Image 1 (cartoon, each protein chain N blue to C red):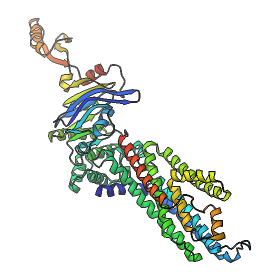
Image 2: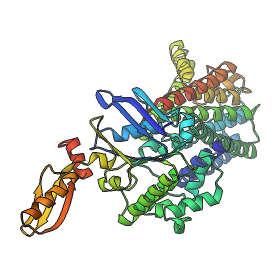
Image 3: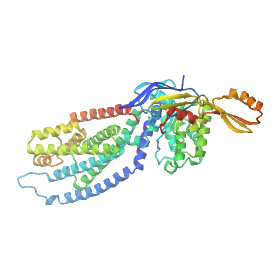
Image 4: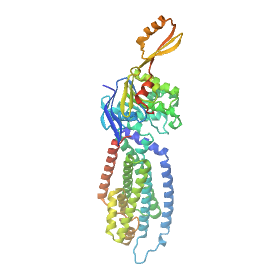
Length: 279
Length: 285
C-alpha cells in the first residue's frame, strides 16, 4: 500500500482549473520531489493530500485512508509553506502542544530528540518570537515529525534556510528515508531535490508533465573529448560510444587526456518541461 | 477531553497575549467605579427625589431596577466586546496568519477544534458576565438595600445572550475575514439593541406595528430577547406606577419573554454552532 496515492485528482477554484487529473504515488520509505512553476498546482496538491483543501474530483489516500480523514491525519506530518506558531510559545511548548493534538506519548524525550534532529537543542526554552525565520522553519520540521508519522509532507521546507540549515534538512531527509518514512517534498530548489529525492514529479498548469527518478529524467547530451587538439563535444554520442571514440582518436594519432559523458541536469529537464513559464 | 482542554488553553493564552483581558479588565474597572459612584449618589439623594404627588412610586425599587438595568446593559456590552475579540479570528484570522493549518492537519479534527474554541470563549465570557453582574448587584444591595426578586436569573440570561454572540462570531469567522466579522457582529448587536428600544417606544405609544417589528428582531437575534427578558425579571416586582414608569424607560424589559424564548435561544445556539462546524469542514484553507 502506497504511503500517498493520488489518482485523477482535480481541483477547480471557480473558473480556475488548478489540478487537471493528477496521478502521483509515494511508496513506503520513498522521497518524492514535487516541482513546477508558481501556479502549477503544487501547493493545491499538497493541501489536498493533508486535508486542508477538498478535491473537486479524483481520489487522494494516505496509507489507504481518504485524505483529510482522521485516520489519514493520524499518519501525517505536515509543514505548510506559510505557517506560524504563536510567538509566545517556546520551542518545547510548540512540540508539547502538537504532541497533545497528535496523541503522542513520546514526552520530553521525543521533544528533545526532535529538537536535536533540527539542531535546535539549545533553543528549547526560547520563544518563537525570538527565533530567526530559519530557526522557526526548523522548528516547523520538528513539529511535523511529532508522533513519528509514516508520511511526511513538506511544503518549501528550506525556503528560509541558509546553506547550513539546508544541509541539516537534507541530512535529516536522508535519515528519515533510511528509517522508512515517506516524504513528499515540494521545493523550488532543484539542486536539493536532485540530491535527495528518489523520484521527481514536475507539474505544469495542473498536469504532470514529467515524472521519474532524477537519473531517468536526465538525458544524454553527447560526449566531451579532450585531446592534444583541444576539447570538442560529440553531440548525440552516449556512454556506449566512448570506447570507439577514443579508439578513433588514438588511431588518428591524437593523445587523449580526458573523456566526459554529458547528461542533462534536472534543471535542463525542468526548463524543457515547463517551457518558458517563470517559476 | 484533554485535547479539548489543550485547545481551550491555546485560545486562552492567545487572548492573554493579545491583551484582550487587559483591555476588558481596565474597561470593567472604570465602569464599576463609575457605577458605584452613581449608585451611591442616587440612593443617597433618594429622599430628595419627588415624583408627582398623584403618582404612587416606590422610589427605591424604581432606582434599583433602573440602575441594575443600566448595569446589565453595560455588562452585556462589555461581555460582547470580550466575546467578539476572543473569537472574531478563530478561523479566517488564524488561517490568514498561518496559525490554523498546523493544528487542522492533526487528528483532532475540525469540529473538535472549533467547538473547543467556542467552549473556551464561552467559559471565560460566562464567568466574566456573572462576575460583573454579581458585583453590580452587590453594589446596589450595599448602597441601596435593594435586590430584584430572583437575582440570579437575569444574570444567567445575560450570560446566555453573550454565549449566543460567541456562537455567531465563530460562525462569522468561518466565512468572513476578522475585520468584516467584527463589524458584522457589532452591527448585529447594535441592531438588536435598537430593536429592543423600539419595542419599548412602541409599547409606550401603543403601536402594535413597532412592537411586532421588535418581537421579530428579538426572535431573530435571541441574545437581545434574553437581555430583554432579564430586564423584565428585575422589574417584575414593580407594580402600579413604578412598573409603568420602568416600562417607559430604556430598561423596561421584553415583550417576547419566558421559557419560549429561552428554548428558542438554545435551539438557535445549536443551529449556529452546527452551521459553523458544517461550513468549517467544507472550507478550503
